Image: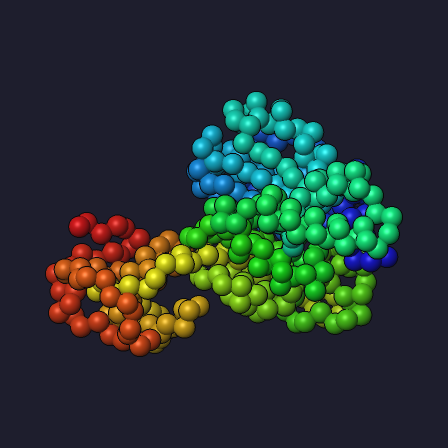
Length: 371
């Protein structure tokens, strides 16, 4: 049995009857759960609560949406101006989630949830459309396979399941570990592709404290049980950094291991990250002060910040470092008089002279400046 087949079968069973060993204990928001049918709650399998990061008006994408629990929780938070898209490749789980769409739309007051069929490592390919294509043009020879590949590439470009830069927040609950190791890098690149510039990621998943050895990875039951496909804790973060995300953070970290297999600890975590704006770095005279408690820190783009120093930054970095995502670690100082934009030419670690920002409005404690 392949890993993919094992995952499909295990979660099809989970759609039919409760599989208690597929989930970790999670303290979900009871008010959001109150509207959900009990079947959706009982047949959801997760290890965290990424719905806590949803904001009003968000377009949310839930990777591996399963029974639809996180989607229906998020739908209550985004409101009528937002939208929630759940993507899953398991027909049994999709049927379960769609079973309650009309009921939930009436309860929420908005039909703002959609469930689509796709692989989370290939968010451009619409598997429902692929099924229809195969019905119309079944595969009977090698030439048919070549034609199908051409159709897939055209579909990805012209009618992607999830469009580029279209999502405010990508969430997932204990699903990334189910993807084959050979597809994990592509999966995270796909997440980066679909998120808007300035968009966010909140991923709850299982990580290991040590690399998982090959003989455990070969165990299909451990893999479908969210164990042997887990990334090592450092590698998990670095995979998102390598894809281009910034502010990559372990926001939640369970102190106690969920399971221990051959001495390797597997625990639930939630990471958050941001897709940076791809705008030019322009120097207008901004500065930030790193509060501490360390003598210096580096961001994911290689900039260095010394504790207590007015570090020169471009306007793009200023807006990012003083956003909520950096948890008030930086004091932002706007220029006393904003000068004409210049291409960024400061070396990393350049200090902004106090004279350039003297009398300027400060952005501290997460509050907007008063100017």
